[in-house]
Image (cartoon, rainbow, N blue to C red; front, side, top):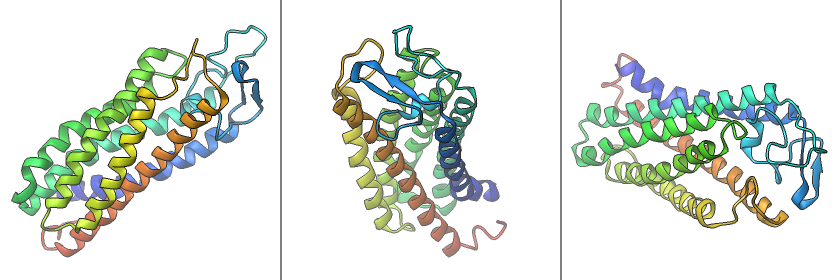
Length: 251
């Protein structure tokens, strides 16, 4: 049990995030390029400012384009890599928050058990939704894909609140980690507001190039902040494991 807790809370997130970025880089490198007629944009490569992450996971390029002149090129290699990485992140979230509550039970940290118990179901739902994004490519079912993507970030925001409170009230983890996660909560709130109330990008939608760039770049920034926030929590939890080595002597 103790070995699994340490693996799920420390090693698995590090491995998963590393694989996610490696797969994203390779996926972007082999991406065939895209064209967006509405803003007169065309590129033979993946664009950091004009292509969403989801486009890496599409079965074919230019999924939203209706002009028959614009070719839809097979994107299978990129799709497999990116969607696999996304499913891995979803599974990691599920296992991380499965172990997160158990950590505080093991530590007998009574001050925040009432808060930590909420992180488990929220973490599982968030992980399922992130995995759902990977299992349902953008061009397979756009509506369901967006449902999973928006739902994942919305659930993640609620989860973030309970996670922050849990760390803040802990007797064993420094408050600096809760303040760092609180900053992530604020950034996530801004992003959730942007995806629900900001410019809408998608099939049959009218948007400007600046609106597209705003949504695309914001998505990449929040993903970066999210992964850094998780790694900061891993570092804090690792400190606790070292200090409480008597509880983890079997690890």
